[in-house]
Amino acid sequence: MTLEKTLIVGTGLIGTSAALALREKGVEVYLSDVDAHAVRLARSLGAGQEWTGQSVDLALIAVPPPDVGQRLADLQKRGAARAYTDVTSVKVDPIADAERLGCDLTSYVPGHPLAGRERSGPAAARADLFLGRPWALCPRPETDADAVLLARELVSMCGAEAVTVSAGEHDAAVALVSHAPHVAASAVAARLEDGDAVALGLVGQGLRDVTRIAAGNPELWQMILSRNALPVAGVLERIAADLAAAASALRSGDLDDVTDLLRRGVVGHGRIPDKHGGPARDYTVIQVVLQDRPGELARLFNAAGLADVNIEDIRLEHSAGLPVGVVEVSVRPEDTGRLAKALRFHGWHVPPVPGAHSEIDQTLDTVSD
Image (cartoon, rainbow, N blue to C red; front, side):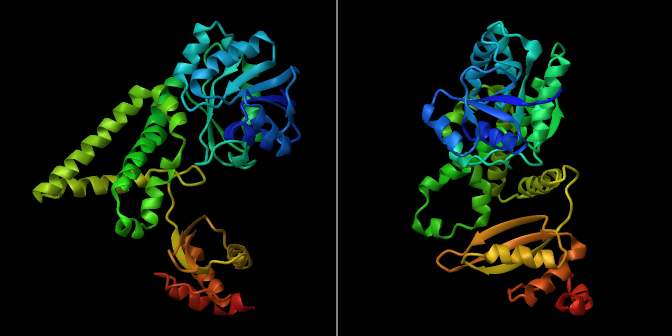
């Protein structure tokens, strides 16, 4: 089974990103959207050409959850593709809609890439958006094997990792790891409406991390949450119970419940897989003070490359009112001393890294050669 022609229905962030990724792999991509401006913008980005009814191998439906079933039915009536998939973040309701509308479910492979950005629309699209990300596929028992192969080929071409789950398992999982966290982040961010200038002037990176996803489109998230309401409500109720217990403990002065919640939080955070998909690894964080000017990050990455050190993760925090920022670079513990020494050699201020002194001493000669 070879994916040569694809139709992207919906040229927003996800649809256009998939189109760009497929174009890089040499796939012939056609674009369709009720918003003609979005199609023109996606075309100008090199995402493909406007669809005028050509038959394709696979149609990817990238529209809001309530519209998936009807769009699938319309496409199948036109014989648009040999197989169909979608990218909505809920699965049970769109499948039920497709059944109610009499769609051919043998050629439909429900899907959901676990990737996104706070920005929306084709202008925010990136060909590497899905690189290394999980992409859920939820075929039913009657789904045709060739349709599944085409969907998996699309996932692979986008650089993602296909994960096969049932629709019910998927919706329960995303309620826990995506939908409820978005609501919780929004609840924290909403409290900032009451913040005065003094409070907002003290905002640090921790708050930015907690509230980052709260910047998502409220109308789109309302549609998502309404289609996965009960699983999300269950998770939020458990979060609310933990928070209520913590608040009660703080008022009473008996902080056992707070300590227990903090400890469970550490355990839960440790269960989040690392970027390789396996158990979380212990990395050492090196802080680097950067001037806020062009080329500084490129210089840092180049210095790491010269020291033969792979940067596992990176986080940038700007200093309010100052022309500097602090970059936190995560590396393997055995690379810590070599990278710290290399960065100092190239002129950066790097605070002392715990446990790295002995390795720094051992690498004095090799880095400066």
